[in-house]
Length: 213
Ligand SMILES: [Zn+2]
Image (cartoon, rainbow, N blue to C red; front, side, top):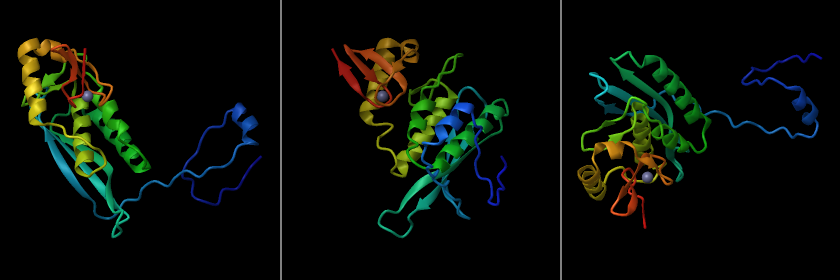
């Protein structure tokens, strides 16, 4: 069977025999259109400097303004770019930014990305940022930048750092040492690998969530 296609092809899928059988009783549902790019986008550039490399990484996230001029006006991230003089990570960074940008453009809830990225740990070991915060990997730090951006445009709630959290981090470092912090468990609330046992409480050094007993 052949069908003449007179519209632009925007998506395709490979059919399996079982799909053919099921197709009869399946309703056609439209796929939401991707967000469109305006000519000029507003964005923010974040600098991260890790002890893993001599060169800083610059992460740019550009936003589109949705429903401009209405009471529902809000920003959504549209694309992400990462630049660095260090070419060591070039290939996976390009892959990561392309996939992340594609997810941004699909619309809907994108906050899961933050949790996924922040749960990535480097098998060679993570590192400490200035201020004593443990980062399990560069990918996790990129996740934190995305989070910081989503918080700043109102798509995510939360505070990344408060004086209480910083005090907890210092306390944990003094009492448990950096090795114990580096082996933190995953937090149910924020997904970070940052839950440690401190004074009979399981405390997340990332979001402050704490369960005692
Ligand atoms: Zn947490």
